Image 1 (tube, rainbow, N blue to C red):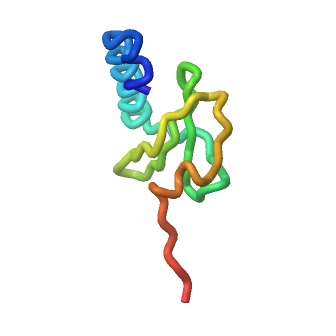
Image 2 (cartoon, rainbow, N blue to C red):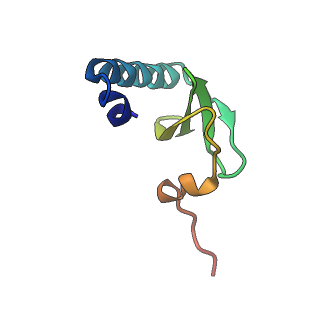
Amino acid sequence: MYEHIAIVDALAARRFLDDINGRIEWIAKLGITGSPRDFIPGLRAFPYRRRCIYFFIDDENLSVLRVLHGRQEIKPSYFLPFYQTEEKD
């Protein structure tokens, strides 16, 4: 997102990135759990400024996987590089 916005306005891109990062810190600080996304166990989502922040959260950590535009079609394959399941014998 930063690179896309920076083509037109580098300062606006920096402000946008700072704003998104601030919201992620706020989510972590308050322990907001977001809404579950059933296509990957444990994946949560929180909408913010026409984007959606996708993350995992536990008692100690919030791990952001992706931030995508809210109108974008979401596919489980967008998250596979970040999510690994244990193989069964």
